[in-house]
Length: 302
Image (cartoon, rainbow, N blue to C red; front, top):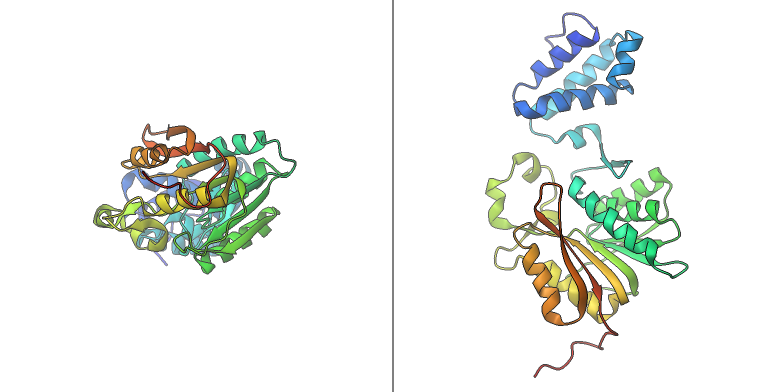
């Protein structure tokens, strides 16, 4: 695991750890070191300095192992085994997407809509739940709601269930395929989804940390059909999955958010169709409300 730091005081261990991450992008090293040292010590840096903390050999061993994994391209969240989302430390594995801040932005907006629903026990669904981050955040923010979390991946659902237990939140999971015509419906009062939306052709331009360590099943769609999951989700809502006047919120590829919004508008079944920008100013989410009582199937076309 060597070479070792010159001493086990905070400043030397920090300098040593930065040096072990010399194959990581320079702009990411300092943040990674900060997270690793806080995680391993269970203390923020200020507390360690105030205590005059000295690092043990076993702690240095673990820091060295973590640095080796990061240098080999593993995501920091996988090395730590957790990712923070809406104030929750959630388990993450290669079977689920690592929760992103932009998804949290959508959840905050949708939780406000869920809280405004007059039903005593409003029902909410997180389609393509992955780690369960959206479902758990909705339940945390609106405790009276009944929240379901569905995904086609059973390994992902296992992670979501473990996170629900860790957070002491009641969320019902289900193994369902959004693209399967036999998918169930409830209906729900609010539906949120972060489905696969990255065209396969973009894989070559993406960081290996994402492509090699996060599930392609949750990332990519065919180049010729980038709206595949949005069309399926809209039709499922229209056919009874979403209650009349129910809310739908979807995370999107920034280049296709306008197309997703147009898809809803063109059906004539949705109102308050809105594109929300993320903190970087990119079009990222589409939200809308179901307009009128749904037909049994699509209305006849002229």
